[in-house]
Image (tube, rainbow, N blue to C red; front, side, top):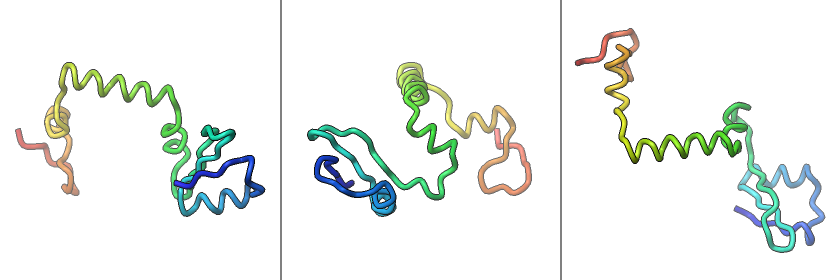
Length: 97
């Protein structure tokens, strides 16, 4: 991650975008982070938006807290419950019970 003080930089937005292709950039003002720029090439819009959405992150954190407090079921158990195929099975075969 590269830190770029805005007060000292004369880079254009296009130049910042090019730099962000190699590593994430943190732009600072008076030593405090203002914004992070990272390459989103190859990402779909939904993933890029959700990865930075504070409300979505809060939902994920609440879910993790709930799992830690109350537990949950494994993916294998969920597959068995819903009669979904196991990973690697091309055709639909009920999961072993």
